[in-house]
Image 1 (tube, rainbow, N blue to C red):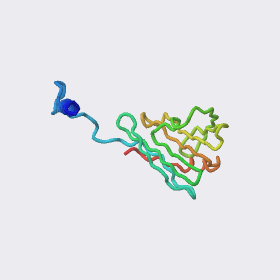
Image 2 (tube, helix red, strand yellow):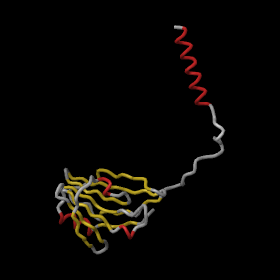
Image 3 (cartoon, rainbow, N blue to C red):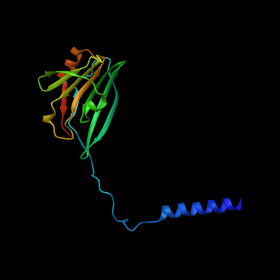
Image 4 (cartoon, one colour):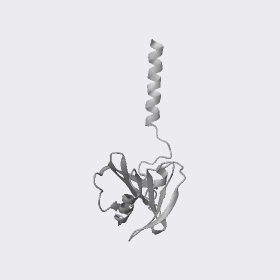
Length: 163
């Protein structure tokens, strides 16, 4: 019993010493450097939310060089619309064999893709050359939304500047 108590006391003393010890390289006057604030990527937004859809999730995502991207999800039962501003929407997909068409609206050009493996999935990505990294990915991913409604969504998108 005495041996266990001495062992525990020695163990606690070692832990306390390890936590309180400082190394020669530590300088209490030096603080880690980080940017004072983030810059938001230009934001792609729906001008009108389609009937039945509601915002179900808004997710901020840290990108490189102190930029913040955003993914906004709208849902109506099994139907969903995800609008990406900054984060790469292809990162959320597994390797799929996509077929694509170019679609133009009054303001934007998109590559509209679909796949036979998941026919309920439509993906529209804007031309990345018009944006600077790390905010060069903007697009819309839908599930169980008809192509005609997707085209209406694309025509009604608005791009808001960085904040």
